[in-house]
Amino acid sequence: MHRLLALTASAVLGFAPVASAADLPLKAPAVPVAAHNWTGFYLGANAGYGWGGSTGNTIAVLSDPTALFTGYTGFQYPNLSPSGALGGGQIGYNYQTGNWVLGAVADFQFANLKDSGLADVPAFAEFLETVQRHSANIDWFGTLRGRVGWSFGQFLPYISGGLAYGKVSSTLTLTAPATGFLLSGETDEVKAGWAVGGGFEYALNTKVSLGVDYIYMDLGHTTVTATNQNFFAFPAVLAMEHHYTANVVRGTINLRF
Image 1 (cartoon, helix red, strand yellow):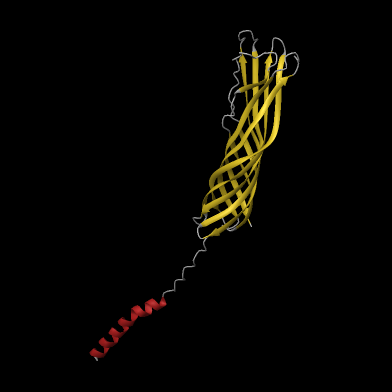
Image 2 (tube, one colour):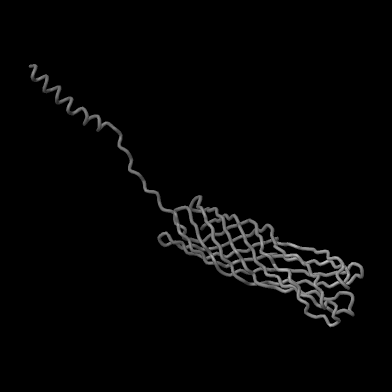
């Protein structure tokens, strides 16, 4: 009898762990998270700041039939570096293959990149005191760039490069306050050049991404000329060449569809 009880107790104890394990709830299998894919069109807006390189300040005397500026070394126009706020929008397309993300983007910016300079030059030799002014502005610009990036899931760093274009404007004056002598002129042009840069985007979800975009842009050279406005007996013509470049940093938001 004692032996029967011992065998029964051993059997119960032996099956107890199995029964306990069977009573535990089953753990649901992990659901794999789908990898983020950047393929598709997007449309967005941006805002930022731009600052230019020196536009140059060298004066050329194009015409001086009365020898008014012969031997004159008093030109002291300062260098200019146009800078200011900007904002606009962009539209583009990405195609992802593996981790590579290839694409193209077009953007347009309203800009307020400007600078002006003034030099008040005391009487120089036989020449009277002169006030020398000039200005340089980038009024708007756009780019059309290719992009190459490497996807780290929701994080996408990239480089870019391509065409840049924009409207630039310049002014140039020289006055002699004692006599009212005035040379002045201005120019407005749409210029084409090139742009390179880079940046990154971070996808908040499948529809919206935020990013930071940097562009270095070169719109080439423009020349502004100043002609005599009142003393027609002295028909001198001055010219200054401006080289328009800009560094642009923008925050971006894109809606993907």
